[in-house]
Length: 160
View (cartoon, rainbow, N blue to C red):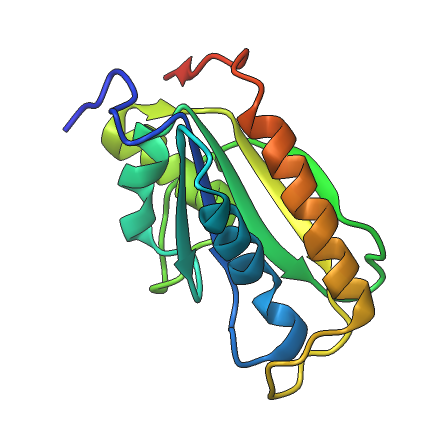
């Protein structure tokens, strides 16, 4: 199936992913949920525990995509970076990494829109629903970045 142009589903797709029962790992779903509550025109949101091959169609149909995830380790700031498809769409498990998801969109649906990975710093990954101050601040920054993206319509899809 080839989807040559974005559907009427929206200009910007925000996918927030992470385990909502593992403290700071819930940053992606929190960001997507906040964006959804703003009801911004032309913006759709998805919340999931992990990226899966089934998300490739939604990615291919969007004009622009933001993937939001928590990042632990030495990451201390919310970071937005453009990502590219992997060389191969090979999937070995039910979860996929962002570049593999983009390769699936490219190879199965024939297009990859501009895609951004927005990472939010995570400190606490134990069981629970409370989040650290670092992640709370990162969620606020991430929401602000997405709102700015939603108000700018200049990016064009990349046909492959």
